[in-house]
Length: 122
Length: 181
Image (cartoon, rainbow over all chains, first blue to last red; front, side, top):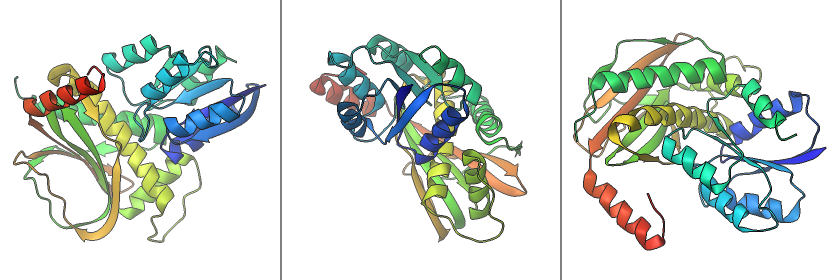
């Protein structure tokens, strides 16, 4: 079982991802939620998260800043992060890859896209 | 820099909106002919979600619909039962419309970036009210694509103005903070 963290400022997207994950045949434990990068860092500090789905455009701390913070810290450097975002431009995709994102899912997404991408990590 | 071809922008709006409705909402939508409109709109009712765009070009993308369609969009996005009748639009409905606007305008941005260079995007702002008017700050006309869904009209509007000095000032601020844009 793996605990997962969803980071998105949209409560609607967090609910959709929760539903897709719960319906998928994957060994999920707890699913935590955070509305921005700062909240997400607090969750990572206090919970044993094994995989993160993170948006890019968020208030307070965006997804790329959050990813940089994680990868700079030896405790979380190996923690896989999949970006789930509207941003599809080459610059953002490359920036996420260079910072160490493990995957990239563009919104709008299908449930199958989420399941297939997660399957590689679960 | 050449101004953006109107047909490219209209096609980007059509493609992005259709994809979001098919993939995320499982709702049929039909486009009506696009048109240009002056910066200020007629008084209207309902929900308006705005997303700012900034780079060498600056502007706004808007998704606008009535409260009934807003509730339908919420139900389909979240996969919950539709509540018949009623006028209520709560925070969950506004959040859903904001996210739909974010996806539509974000995918329009992804397409037009190929012609206009990199663009940043704000997080959405969403408004619900009666008898209100929206107005852009510049003099550029809005490109408007109307869509019909469940016999209600939804408008997707985009307005962009060439503004290279804005990009320069943002680049300067980013350099001061140690970022590259």
